[in-house]
Image (cartoon, rainbow, N blue to C red):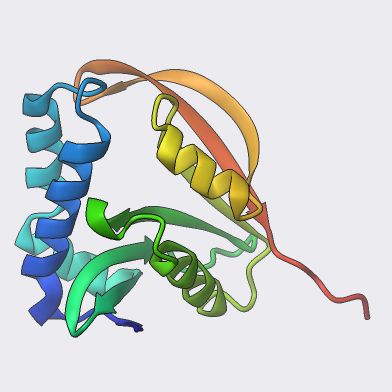
Length: 163
């Protein structure tokens, strides 16, 4: 089941982010940098702000949260960003990611493009985006919490109906 997130879901979102990051980025991003990022990005004040200003969806399996997605709202240009889509490792490749993405797209009815940024070595993430219609735009180096990383920028173009 996919549902909208609430304040009561903050501890579950924090746990899913930590577990999936530690699994996905082991050997790619040092653990201290992962922890620093997670502490800032998933703090209670930051999560409260995300709940007010963005779209947070949770995937549940047997009543327990197993994954989440976070989307910005559509801006004046028709663009939105998939900020995060994380799944507990044991629920990856279970269809929940696709359901989160599909449900998220339904919250963006006036969207033209959905952007996502993923670490270049994150093959699981890149395979997911490519399998779901995202196209690679570019790769670039950036500093992430002071650590150099290669980042891949993808775009999903919404299907438009001719008038």
